[in-house]
Length: 292
Image (cartoon, rainbow, N blue to C red):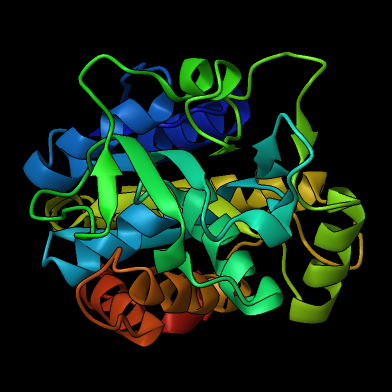
């Protein structure tokens, strides 16, 4: 049973629990962790894998053998990820160029959702540029999105003025000229999360259908161990940073699915309960076993 998890504490807990459940787990070290997604989703080359929430949604929409182990490995506010160098603001997105690493990048899906929902932006009136393809075979950029030339990189294009805005999370370069397009972005993000009842989720854990059928006890043990780690570290704020369990993730998945459909990231509406039911059926457990 092969596992790809970016967090050391979660990886150690999952490996130990799976071993005690009778499996022979092996951690596959892939960095950054999103590089493992394509092989997991399309080829099932590992059994349990940290995945972006949008990759899970795309996998379900495109019929890939991917299930959800409802553990949040990365949650964070996102309003600060739309940045600019000049005097432009979120009100200026229409009619200007915006770069994002990939159209299905979860950070971009969240930020574009805020643009339409909070700021009334018509996404098709901005000039969008992407730099990478999708993790899920079959997914393509919308016709109104342009792919950057081979070899181009978003941070460089942004700093050198070839795009007016950039949507960047971990890849944000260090430069004193950079400012958030949303004024008081962190405060706005906190208010959004309080109103919605959740902090945007970036990464969760996926499990292949084959692994769920072959190693159900080990998969469930890994879930229990990771849940214990995250619950112990939760700071007890008004909104959980790392929700665990099907109900804990319902709001984030439902909102992300709505945004993804609106943005042509997924080809059909995705019902969260479809994912819950498929996962429970494969593992042979009721939803309550996984926080449903």
